[in-house]
Image 1 (cartoon, rainbow, N blue to C red):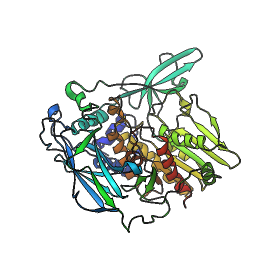
Image 2: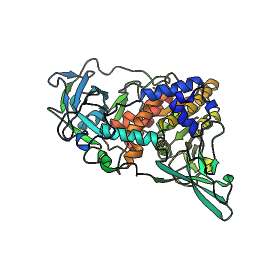
Image 3: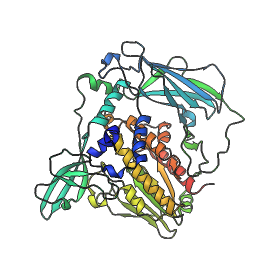
Image 4: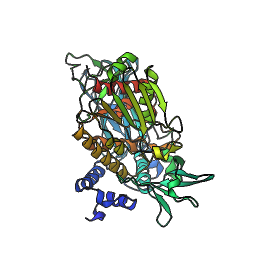
Length: 511
């Protein structure tokens, strides 16, 4: 096998992944996925700032705004980009987010963006409710910033730092850790034996590698950008900046006798389509299945009775655990972690035979002071789970993976998918649900270097593609957070978490 013909794989091999662990289909899949998320390139590596995208000069135009629209119709919006000199842009690559909304109805839905790669974009919306419907278009990043983000993501390994403490008696040493460390330096190899996921720490001066006791986040490296490059990430200039309409910024939508068709119960194995739903009166209405409202502790308890719920992932999955733990008075919390926010957690309702468990995924994860013995990879947790009709598994993995080259994320999902296929083979009644990524804040500004929605957008696209045809279900947190009127936050507020859990439970307990 010629590794040099597979650049994504060559990068992984150089960081400790074993070449023999990749099947031919996995190798080909990696190349396909990287091709799938390729982004339009701007014409030069360093565009003068005045020639970059200026949202204040740019505008959007509602097509056929004079027409009569009905619920169920398509709405199309054209966006035209200009630079700071007022000249029209001649290339694409800007990252936009768009939604339609009606504040008085607490209604909202996202649009799909088509890049014509000439400075113009078309956004398609589906109209789900009647009344005055407003259009909102946000420039998240100009195309010039995207090129820098791509360079930072793919070419700079040590954007963020991790560390571990080693202890024996009164001797304590702390060293830096990462997926890939420089050659020629003594390291401790903590590569997972089952999944082959590599992780290394610099070897302590006095203590053996076996003395490792924890994992923790450390600092950030913000020194990549020089000169004018930081101007591409200016919070009140071109970062998360609205684009205003040229002409009306809203339409009036009439009711339709064909609206509101029954979409059936929520089932596994269906791929997500966009738009996957919309908000109305702060309730998420799915386009794929009927969502039940679990508005009381009794409703949730009845659904979970006799069930074991495993929640694997990051702090956005911990929000689900907290929702259950705080909302069900009969659930008693047991905390096993050495810090309250990190877990792992178990909550038990003895009378109703309910158990809810949360555990964070394996490194890289930017939590404080996690016992290294508690860092478990999701694939290994799945392999150890016998499954069954009373076993419910929810997974999310994205927020802590934006620091890495995309190839590492692909490999993590390949391992998880392999374990899911094996689990469903031996226990096909097991319900497995993925919560997708969600949009987040980019404040302070340097957060965009590491946590940008542009990174998460691609990880989410890869997740959806890789699990097509697998008998799992999805909670589309991406659209559920992007469509809502509240400010973006990596930890969405309770109104969104409630809707996420309603979708989750609707797969477990449909109408």
